[in-house]
Image (cartoon, rainbow, N blue to C red; front, top):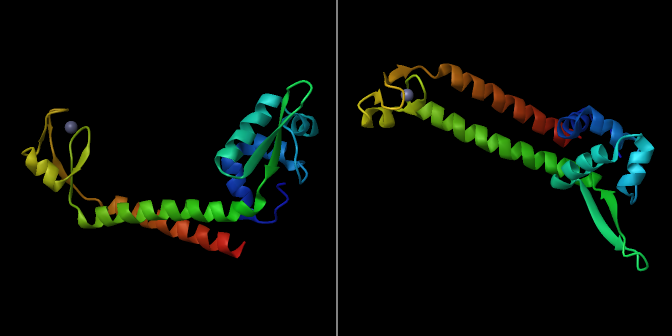
Length: 169
Ligand SMILES: [Zn+2]
């Protein structure tokens, strides 16, 4: 299931399910499979397999349907993996992160920031409190946010690069 030549895709999986999860999913063939069969194939514990399946399910990469045995009433979960969804999901995730970073960057660029011992606030908030923080009992002092802006710009570039790589496949 993880037979992918794409480095970006592999990194995404590693981030999602960890190295142990990668080992569990490595030998899973296509088609439907039960959690017990996956455990047998990978030699992993059933609880570890279920944890990985749950993460993949939450991320819309794994799906299941249930089948009830009419005699015993026993319910079997049959899992299936949606490889085609991965690229789309990665793009959506990157897009969401990028939007957040862009809006943060916009705020940092237009705002003037002040800081006390416990928090960082906008000029307007600091002025409203007469530049005194009641929570920690210290002055709000002006802070240069060039560093924050630079960090966000770097993050934005990194995500944009990631998005280009996802598109390339
Ligand atoms: Zn404070």
